[in-house]
Amino acid sequence: MRDIFPSVVAVAVAGPDDWLGELLPVEQACLGERAVETRRRDFAAGRSCARRAMTDLGLPAAAVPAAADRSPVWPAGVVGTITHTTGYCAAATALTTDVRSVGMDAEQHQEINPGVRRIVLLPEEEALCAGLPGGTSWPVVMFSAKETVYKVWYPVVGTWLGFRDAQLDIDPDAGTFTARIAPARLDQATVEDPPATIAGRFVVADGLVRTSAVLLLR
Ligand SMILES: CC(C)(COP(=O)(O)OP(=O)(O)OC[C@H]1O[C@@H](n2cnc3c(N)ncnc32)[C@H](O)[C@@H]1OP(=O)(O)O)[C@@H](O)C(=O)NCCC(=O)NCCS
Image: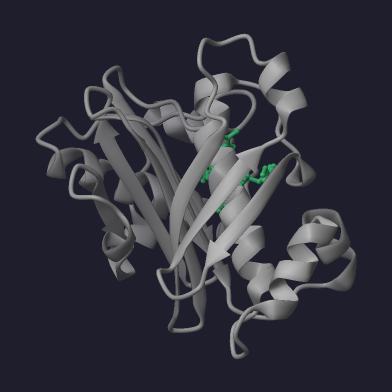
């Protein structure tokens, strides 16, 4: 993930020990006692990576509980993001003095189910995919980019953003995307200056699609 973030963002990718990492009591309380083992491992890896990404910024390895809506609750002065998919987990953090919001997502690089595809892609995005170079599952890149966009949007605006509320453009050579947020969602936002466009990066390698986006403050 380091390769698709600017240097003000600290990134930690899970190694074997992270999946077995200890949770702090407040995090364990969010996870609950009845979580299945795979969920416990994913949650633990995310928290372990989050702590490493915070210490890389020179900050204490603080707890990252989950809010009732499942979004991570970062310590004051920190923004961050977590993703996991089979065999892969990463977290990224930054200081609120540098970054307004950060998001990332990882998915397996495979075809997506036609039903999911119909939900995720706008007709304009289907047309875009048809013209992009072969060898890449562009609908999965778009799916991942949209999940990243949501992870950037939600901590700032605090409202729902559906898959069809953002229209993506992709530059396959630069490995970048731009999401234009639907005007109706911007009008509904109660925060000052909701992001009308969210720009990000993507990479397809090692069987994974990874996407990132950062709202830089300077
Ligand atoms: C929240 C969501 C984006 C997570 O993506 P995912 O592919 O299911 O799962 P990932 O492993 O990549 O990410 C999960 C992590 O996202 C984080 N997360 C959950 N809700 C979040 C939110 N509202 N805002 C920011 N981060 C959130 C959590 O850290 C979670 O991991 P954890 O539970 O272990 O802490 C997804 O479940 C979702 O609700 N999508 C629908 C909304 C959407 O994507 N709209 C597109 C707008 S263009």
